[in-house]
Image: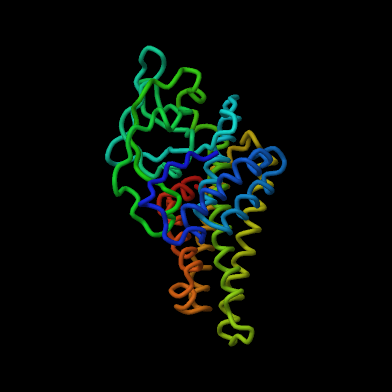
Length: 332
């Protein structure tokens, strides 16, 4: 379950609404206890079910979807490493590499001493455990840490965003007691070199798709029964784009199930193509939704305003130019 240590002063005034902290905590707790134990692992024959589950939760609330994706990805990573998660704990994956300096791991008596900071730690004040990457003399390592023990500080004001605010993706500082040796996840460079890295990347795109679907679903409910042809055209564009995104993700899921060990070496190419298609589709959906509904849904409807802001921010996780360069390199 989640570690609900949220500062009351940070609590959203619209508690219970889309994006409010209390609503996100309740939904994430429900996912961790009821849904996560049943969600299929990637590459086991039911990856499309996994993606649709992540999309469904993201369609309800994209901050919740982000936390659900992180928890599910952590469980899959541990399984890929031949390890078991700590029972009944909520998880996240904190793997961002900061421009201000890396997170370090130093070998000491009793395990590994973490130090330094890491940005974009989603669920910073909510989750109980996290898979954290760190630089070391032995290489790039991954640790299964207790957030209560190894997180020693939160950098103030490090997540001031409006979009995805409730995901609590703050910059954290690490220290505390050493991480035990048996909590090192896989060998050096395991996190980036395993096939599942790219399967998880497609899982993020499934959340983008879910966020876009939530925008369109709210839009159709809010429009008047008698819509102009211009409005219908924009709505039609959004619906068609959603269907293209769904087909792309369904194809990617089938390819993952057909080659779970990435013996073809195509997992990276597949993931980058799927992410680009879904990212561009989600942006097109935002544009079409604005064209269909005008300013009203995004300014006068708090639910839709939050959805649009959340989706815009989450889509910035896409590495557009660098991914395009890599796709060109792989194609050549």
